[in-house]
Length: 380
Image 1 (cartoon, rainbow, N blue to C red):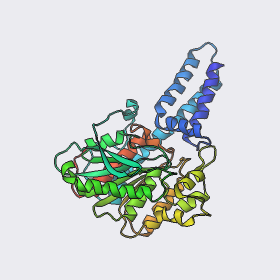
Image 2 (cartoon, helix red, strand yellow; image 1 turned 45 degrees about the vertical axis):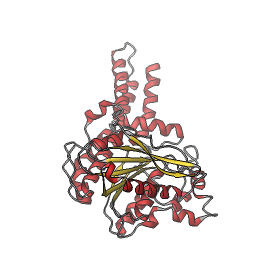
Image 3 (tube, rainbow, N blue to C red; image 1 turned 45 degrees about the horizontal axis):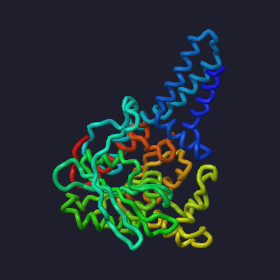
Image 4 (cartoon, rainbow, N blue to C red; image 1 turned 60 degrees about the vertical axis):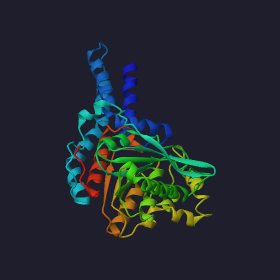
């Protein structure tokens, strides 16, 4: 009976690889289910095997466990399918870059668990206000000479988080020949749009001033943001018109703030309207211009920089439709772009670089950087 109960629970959990979570805590579980699928599939099969060996064998438990195992493996199967054409699609979208000595996705890579590899970084104060000091963590590229730099902007609903989030990708970029400058910015509700975008501008000015000391190639700068940080990165990339900016990477960010307010997340997951009101100074009815002025879509033109979009279809915090709208607007303006769509993935799927979504997105990021920066980068 205990075995059957556990298998039923696992079957219910496996459905998070197919359907969106309906509560905040189920969303957190869905990250584990979809990015560590081998663990859950293995546990399901272990219970099935135990049942076959046991004296009180039940066929129903075996069927339930087998179905659960197969559903848990769906992210693996889909990731393998996407990986077959990912390189060619990225080449088509952005042109040929340096050939990478790695595959977009390998099943054995998931066995490493959470990637804890960290590079050393230096902390700098890049901007000071009377009541706030802003810092950036600089991960130097492990390569000689001036190198391109990726300016990373953290998520956190514009009101929380810091530049210590998800440092594994920063380290990976550094070992791949790219500097990573990871910034803090002023947070809501005390600071509202466009304060964070102004902070990105200040960070760009800081690294420009210290480019020689830090060995930064200021002709090859790329912005990368996650969630709320992606909204900031997109507005900065399309609106600041920085001369050396070559591209922007959008991890599951809101691109249409007006539409996003009209189609909020489920309240049991997140009160997204309250989050937006804190960042923009009120509801859409009260400050509609603020919503328009913070929508990346409204800054896109034919001269906008190439854009890599990465989003999971099962995202319950920032709707997948934001990225669809973003790509449509980029296509209308003839801007180079690629949308890495992950059918099984939810918000913050890149918590681990070794999961199905983590591997594919990391490959796409490096391939994008190799394609849009002027100097060929070393293969990894």
